[in-house]
Image 1 (tube, rainbow, N blue to C red):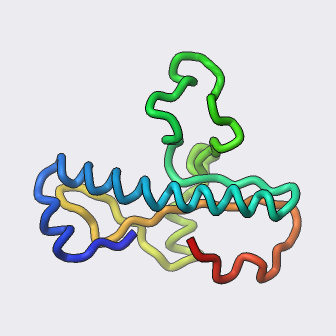
Image 2: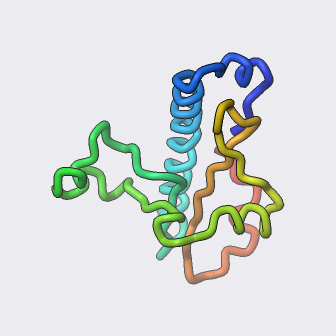
Image 3: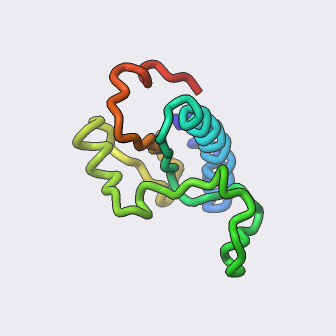
Length: 129
């Protein structure tokens, strides 16, 4: 998710940084999640992992010790399984992860994964969201 200079400039308070981050990342994450679920349907015995936590429901039922309302869509995050996302992005993809501190960063990186025991070859090249 790349932000232009004007958006970065407008994000001049913690509240604005949080709002812009939440809205923009949620939109991209929803598109990525939908695409990954489609790929799971096309590739037998595969499962996807998502970036960050699950935001399918306004309030997660699991917080109240109840079963997930959308188990067919809910996916665990890579970091919940101990994946070192900083190492993956820097070592394998040559991308530095950016974080917001006192300003909106120039970009954020969302990492989703598709796990399968079979080689996919070039099947996943040039996927568009």
